[in-house]
Image 1 (cartoon, rainbow, N blue to C red):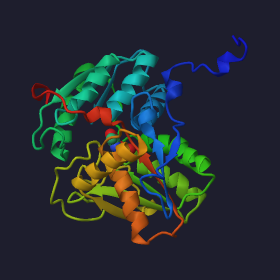
Image 2 (image 1 turned 180 degrees about the vertical axis):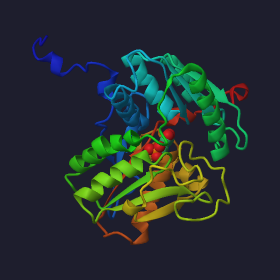
Image 3 (image 1 turned 180 degrees about the horizontal axis):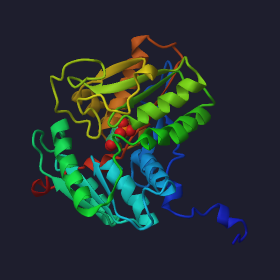
Image 4 (image 1 turned 135 degrees about the vertical axis):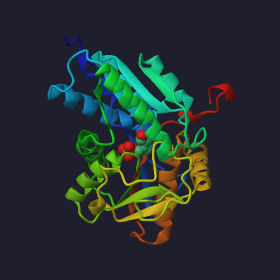
Length: 324
Ligand SMILES: Cc1ncc(COP(=O)(O)O)c(C=O)c1O
């Protein structure tokens, strides 16, 4: 009950900490002309943007009766979806199992297990630790499907679940529109399942069809650009799987921007040193792409470019060799 109005200040659970992330101007890294504005997705309780889709997919499954109260949940993850689901399932009381390639950072498995989930780390078939390929994801998926068959758990299926992109249509897009005072010239995102890009670009294009939406692809693994894969290994864990995902929507994309591993690492470092924000690889790639775009002359000089700081750099801090 309300006591001196404090109930307004108290969040009912961690679920209310998801979304409504601040947007920050990277004015020290890019003093202009134009501006880079970045959504602080690492501030979600699972420390990544995937908390948004985790909450929405689970809520919708409970609403439509596919997921019964207390029933077990299973998902295949590169880690961040698993951390987001672990937050949601802990609060709502669903036992959670995740399968994840051993190539994804072990910090994510530690994080999920700290929230009561079980993480099955699946050996890699192609990549190496820190570099996860489509074949590695498929191996994690095969193990996940085997466990679904065995246990009857509810399978979230982020790559084919339209509530994944819908979460960004309902939250990320409207937040950007509101927080920029409806001033957006371009939006930039990396693509894993494509949930983020598809939902956010759909919302923004509906608001203003002149907004240009760009996809970031790792150099040499650019299927959305239409190129053959020449370099399947790259550092953008959680994105750039070398295929066009089911949820992807070409009609809202203006162009792709190619970013190398060196550019990604350079901008991760700059975001830390100049902006005081310790972020992960896809955040570095997003900001590298924003700078490339502002330098390209493809936008008006005073353009506002909006992008995402997808997760925390703490998810990638080096760990002892025996765990990798
Ligand atoms: C760090 C990181 N960046 C970007 C993405 C891509 O997001 P989406 O699956 O919405 O395309 C993911 C997805 O897991 C991720 O973990």
